Image (cartoon, rainbow, N blue to C red; front, side):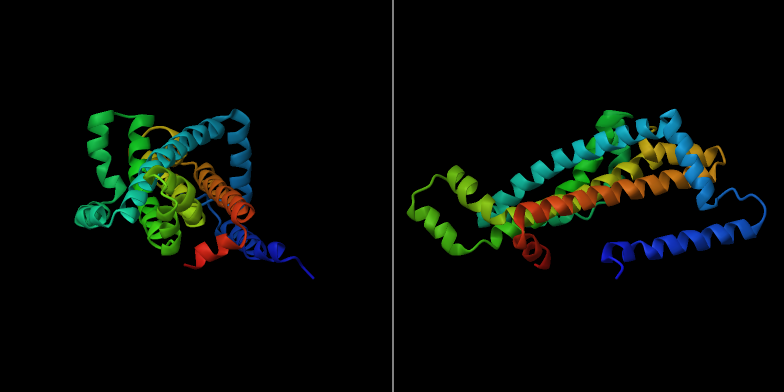
Length: 254
């Protein structure tokens, strides 16, 4: 029998073959489409001259730095909101009023305050990553078995020790899931910022290829971004299953 993982690649391969045939049959050169074979050649050329590697470095620096900044702040706030009910009620309206703001809507403000470059992009990515980590961390802390908290009180643990020894270990599978979701958001927002305004990274590479009327290279960048996202998520899934085992499945089911 064919392995399940191999079966998952059958549909994408069939789509690529069909797309190749369709574009080749369409005839004249298109400014917006290119056959997969031409996309593959353009990707090889971009790797050969190093341009796509530099763009990848710039995007991943911004995405990971924003994830670290926004995720850390979201985790701290999520723990505080989950443990301190009065603080949770106090911040509820503020959080729910700010959370729906699209991260890209902050671009004009961030551009004026920080200018082009890494700092502006990192701040926008951090804002986008803050909310999923905060919401899921708060829910994870709130869902901890109350008896564990009672045990920590019976042991007379300090608030810091209670968080370090009881709260975080109990909520860690769902907190890791929050960071896994935020990692995908970080990549999406970083590329979006680069397409919209920041002249670095993979998003800027897409725009440069589009302006040069190179649909093969433009689509090559899109394919490469998809491969990065797939690899990132697959790596985090493997780490999640390795670290937490069955607890990882429970965390996703909640």
